[in-house]
Amino acid sequence: MNSNTLNKVVNFIWFQTIWVLVIFTQYAFIWLIGLLFVAFFILSPARRRDIALMITAMVFGSVVDSLLTIFNIFAFNSAIYFIPIPLWLTALWGAFALTLPYSLNYLQGRWWICAFLGSISGPLSYWAGARFGAVIFPHTLLYTLGILAMVWAIVFPACMYLTSCANRFFKEPH
Image 1 (tube, one colour):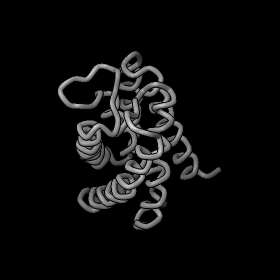
Image 2 (tube, one colour):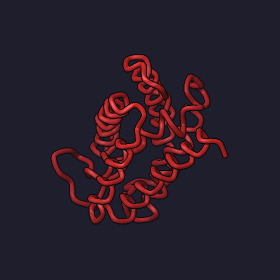
Image 3 (tube, helix red, strand yellow):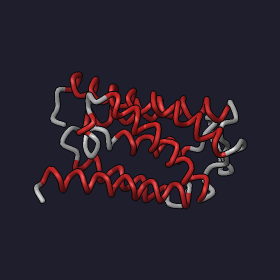
């Protein structure tokens, strides 16, 4: 396995670790999630770009999920502070953003594939979260997944576009 492939695998495992921690424990291991972000940035070859991308995606994703919460597409039973969604979900958006220039960078510029994959993987992620008790679907599963599929068909390509903008702006390796 070459180093580029190894980096993609490590990035993917890093994200999945954060996903499992937030979905199964919400705030219980927030300190470990923080340490995982610190480790990421210590090893990052493009810190400024990654920080900017992470913050932008956290704001964007928090707005998207806050709107979905306000419109009762889903709800949460964990503690909510300052915004309509749990802070652990905002952290998950930050982790997701940090997969875009690394383990998911092969999708850059492939907008239709991103829309297709987003319409499947986004809803599946929320559905898994619902199955494990991290999120509640007040409506039928089909209705909720349909709304999420439409949203994520736009959100994922938009996140990839944000990544391409960050790459151009910071002109750092990706």
